[in-house]
Length: 271
Image (tube, rainbow, N blue to C red; front, top):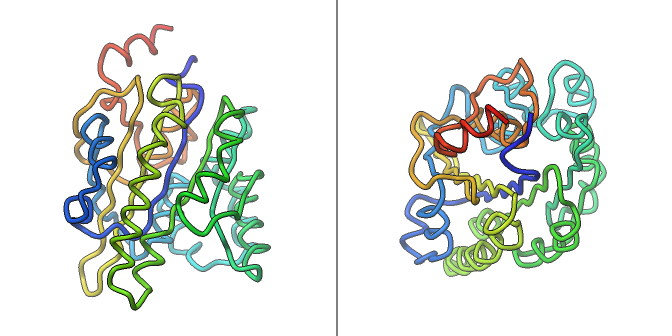
């Protein structure tokens, strides 16, 4: 079935604290939220770490999260045979998948690459210490890969939180915002047939409360507004649905069809 878009650019942002967008006047981020479909993702059951949320996002399942957090490559290799990770599912349909993680310590690159490979990210980059450098490293792929999934991970905020300089977080927020200012056009979401998906994860709090995340869908096919009752598990099926691909039966979430508006959904259904 024809999809709403030909490619999805998935941007992950770690370390977004509550109020960051307002506190540091992140104009570009706020504009994307206002013009796109946005949702606050409430913590799901057993969502006890940022890593757990990433695993749920990339697999569409919560049942493997507890096992996979901090797991070895062998576990992911075995587990990927019994579930269908998002990137792997897209690859299996003949679409391209690329990932841009930024700088990773040399000692961790082999493990990270192996984990990413089993999840379906066969084209992976480790270039860039800041969001601008990571986006710069992705430029060639953004300009040439016309179908499939492009994942971009921005860690400026998470790294700034570990710094002893209190000003670092604000500077990191501004760097992220500058990158978000150019990604709508670079991704093709503004004028082309691409979908920009932003998942900004808040840090997990101590005690009984856990961090929330913000999800934004942006593109010509997206209807501006807010989506309710959204889970991190809904991201993978939404991406598959938008690309016109069959949603794996073991995905626990739902496609957020309401983000695209009734006319667009109807047109897709009868295409």
